[in-house]
Image (cartoon, rainbow, N blue to C red):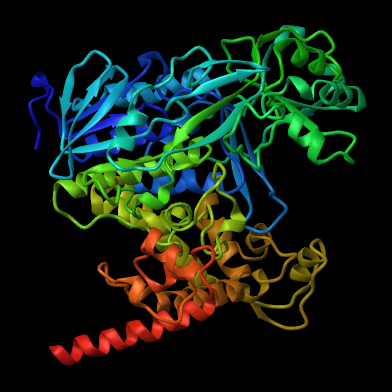
Amino acid sequence: MNRDYVNNKYDCIVVGAGHAGCEAAISAARLGLQVLLCTLNADNIALMPCNPAIGGPAKSTLVREIDALGGVMGEAADATYLQMKVLNSSKGPAVRALRAQSDKKSYMAYMRNVIESIENIHIRQACITELKLTDGQVSSVIDEFGIEHYAPAVILTTGTSLDGKIYVGLKAYPAGRLGEMPAVGLSDSLRKHGLTLKKLKTGTPPRVDKRTIDYSKMTVQPGDKELNFYSFKPNRPIRPQYECYLTRTNEETHKIIMANLDKSPLYQGLIHGVGPRYCPSIEDKVVRFANNPSHHIFIEPEGLNTYEMYIQGFSSSLPADVQVKMLRTMPGLEHAHVIKPAYAVEYDYVPAVQITHSLMCKTIKGLFLAGQINGTSGYEEAAAQGIIAGINAFNFLNNSELLELSRSSSYIGTLIDDLVTKDIAEPYRMLTSRSEFRLLLRQDNADERLTPYGHKVGLVDDLQYKLFTDKQNAIKQQIELLKEIKLSKTPETDEILSKYNEHIDRGIRLYELLKRPNIPYTAICELSPEIKNMNISKEVYESVEILVKYDGYLKRQTEQVDNSEKLEKFKIPENIDYNTVGHISTETREQLIKIRPKTLAQASRIGGVKPADISILMVLLERHQYETIQEH
């Protein structure tokens, strides 16, 4: 490897420098590849074009999984936060989520500094217009200047730029993001090579001048007093917490929206791409939830060195002048000055049923796709795909086994399996409800699940791996100690337990006591000087508490994983001819031919495939395995 970059020869070319592109380039380069990172605008590397925030429900687990694999998003979020907050803290561990409001410019600077510190990443500002193949494998790309760049592996992370078009009211112009040109030409090249492309739509809210906001009319949304972080690495920076604010739409806001729907490109049929169901525009909310008199709107800072405030929950494609009228109906925004209007963007994507779990294209060797080009929505989903694509570009070039994470191992595995198995018709957003194993796939144990992978591939160094093993040993030792120590019934213990509305009639093991819902780990420390004097870290005792309190549920979910893996063991031959398989429905046959699942478990998750059809396939595969054994 280590090709001659002076003559435009690289190991891997990454097209796009958003969150997927950054993780892809960094992981591939750290593994030793010479990487060319192409971007439409070198000043916008790791840009947050929508909300400058990282994490939230399900997404925080993705960020921690990226970190556990050796990625950068978590440490960048930790280094540049304006506010850290745990959402759903009063609920179960499966849905707790960390969210960081980030300083947009600082985040970009941090990520660019990481990229520029890696010698074998070469940044180039250029629009890639053509993909070239040799014998069915990627061989080069051509940019807008007609310059050819050579590499046997290419990762496409084009975001919303691929033939992008922006809408503000009924006015539309070619752009991938406000103020940026679209990527033109590459879509046609991909179609020429046999790929199917479709349209999706997304949008972003307006930004307003913070000096024109009356915060006294809004509800303050503070950060957490006790900080939590994304990265499992030590030495996290302690930064000041900045406040966000909450206001609401009202009847007047909704009247203006309803009176101007004739000026909405979405409602006038100008936009054909499907938008994100879980992040609708404000006009969509008002129309779809007509009985709701009001909607929450959050006012959040874009950074310390800017006056821009982000109006979360207020994305729109209505005309700019209408947006101003809408905003000024809400408490605290009566005199708001709009710096940037909201807009909708429609762009090309490649339905991900055309790629494998490794993110490599089924029909073009060496071509990987990651991020919004696969139909996803969100920085975290993009970055998660980016690190997998970067790792697998390296594995592909080294003839190593490609990394394919399972649904039971991670949210990343769930995300990718959904993309490549199901026909996604709208921008895909990771949700806790998408995982059938969400109690096992928590944000607190992402390191336990994925750090061994990261260390094996070479992205997690020995020091970080030692910190990981030390933490796992501490958790194990703490649980063993809780099982050993028996608490006696005394006046002192009765007094402490009464504070938690608990009591004991006789001696009890600390492990059994911690199982009680009212007893937190801090109570165990009060009751046992031996436990208290161990002074274990917050991360360790939180993991211990979850493992003890949810022991029964975790065991049941582990059994579910074992049962699901039985279907995973039924491998489907790549050359199977589904047209010769009798007694399955036509719909099932069409879906199986289209997606070509690798296992019976994946086949069972395809939309339209019926349980009866799975039973027929199981009999067929069992017979095939028997005949194969007989032949040998």
